Amino acid sequence: MSDTLKFQLIEGDIKSLARCISLVENEAPGYEAFMQSLNTSNKGQIIGITGPPGAGKSTITDALIGAFTADNKKVAVLCVDPSSPFNLGALLGDRIRMSEWYNNPNVYIRSLASRGSLGGLNPKIIEISEIIKAAQFDIVIIETVGVGQSEIEIAGLADVTVVVLVPESGDEIQTMKAGLMEIADIFVVNKSDREGADAFINTLKQMLAPVFHHKQQEIPIVKTIASTKEGIELLKEKITATNTSKVNDRKSWLLAERAYQLIRSKRMQDIEKSDLKKEIENNEGLINLYQFIKKYY
Ligand SMILES: Nc1nc2c(ncn2[C@@H]2O[C@H](COP(=O)(O)OP(=O)(O)O)[C@@H](O)[C@H]2O)c(=O)[nH]1
Ligand SMILES: [Mg+2]
Image (cartoon, rainbow, N blue to C red; front, side):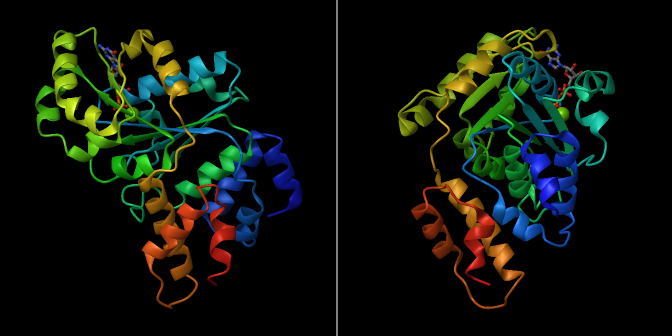
């Protein structure tokens, strides 16, 4: 991977960004040195958006692209959907919405296959996020379907995790895994044009009371009608207001897991994941994964 390509990436050139991601995904010669050379202390907020199929995640993502770009921010979207990994049209609702952003140099959209090595997430999603941030993107939105493991994993990667529900999710939250409750930094009740939205919000508040108590802070609940963009500005504000500098346990575990996989692919020696996690925590999260693992080779 050439210096010219890296230079163009850092300049924010979209074509070079796409090329870098493909080369890293395919482990092209020199990709590790390339990853080591990236400045990972770049700012840039990773927003995870998860929730059941059809809740409106893609519609919200689309509206958020509009809201953030209106603030002159560069926005990248990664769609992770195990059911249709290659059909970006289906993932983003429809191709017409997609094409609105297609020629915008401040927007980058990519669909990722999930191959399951990090739960439901793409095995190179950490790398891909770093490359996007290196291209000076301010916002990386990762849309995952809230079934299976991916929604829990996404919370490790995301600085802010948004869980999208709809008024009909009543039964769902009664049986919702505690995990999904715990990972949310923000809840969105979308499709609030439908009946029962306020009643649902009250139920949700009651369900969350013990979690509030545990976290010692309220988790915002934002009411939206994504299809008309109602509530999207408020959602954007809540996202922006969420403290992103925290190093959480899930993030350390996710990085340790990935470091472990990378080291194991190089050597068969025993290495403890929990030791890696401790070391990552001592680095306060400001870690270039590929520099970090070098000494273990
Ligand atoms: N009535 C209503 N429909 C919505 C709203 N937001 C999204 N939709 C529709 O719900 C369907 C599923 O939305 P989509 O964003 O693809 O859901 P996803 O599977 O969670 O990504 C689409 O037909 C949207 O147009 C909303 O606020 N109200
Ligand atoms: Mg979708």
